[in-house]
Amino acid sequence: MSRLNALNSSNVPPKLRAVLPVSPGPTFPTAALPLDPIDRQTSLGELAYTSLKEAIVGGQFSDGQKLTVRAVAQALSISTSPARDAIMRLISEGALVNSGPKTVVVPTLTLAALDEVTSIQLILEGFAARVATERIASQTVEELKGLELQLNAALDTANYAAALKANKAFHFLIYKSAQMPRLVSMVESLWLRIAPSLSGAYPTFVDSRIGLSNHMEAIAGLEDRDEARVQAAVEKDIHDGYQRLVTCIRQRRR
Image (cartoon, rainbow, N blue to C red; front, side, top):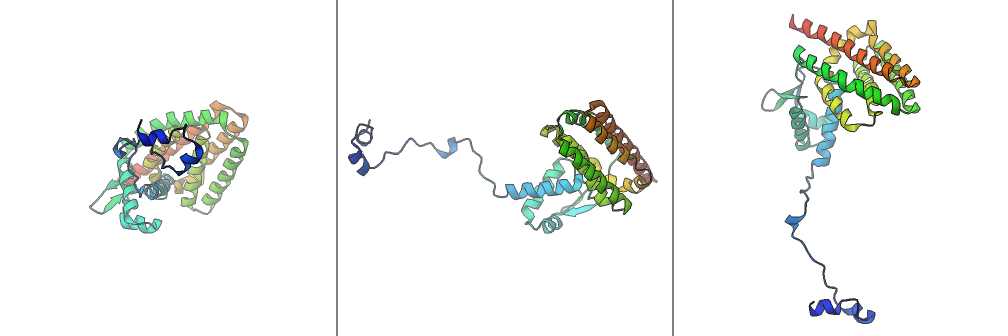
């Protein structure tokens, strides 16, 4: 032990210890700490990503719609750097594709992609609905009823953007009630791919409103804690949506 350390040890009288310099503890080189450098754009970039992702999942963008970094930055009142980060992240997830040096587009949904996404949706969303039946709170079921009223009102006025937003909120309120965040993230990745095409399907949805009956069936099943009933209602809603999207894709080919 060094002389200084010896003087600072616990056997030194308190009055003497108070006037002596404190021996510093052991130090470690910065490189040895398991920490990554802080990216000062991370929080803003994450917010930009979340906002843009929510808009896509909610069907607020349509097939083939063009986006630029500058336009996204202006819409979000942020600089171009976090806007670019958000766009690049969504490109890596397949929600956007490059169409030029400064432009990206919402990809057009193909029948092959729809088939793939729908087959996975049936498994994941059906499972999420079943688990949610056991865990959903009564207050959340009341929120679902409110969203259904919003969806009806939006369809009555042909406000398809609001209808898509309410529809997305309805489904994900159920899925989040399963209390399985990784599962919800996987479902979101599927909606990123198909949601932009839903806007084209909603005008034909106004007359039949098949989806609304599926939603009411899901709500009734949740109130009764009937797992099979809720799962069947969600799966039927996915099937019905698939049929409308197939029609839209075929009409686009003509």
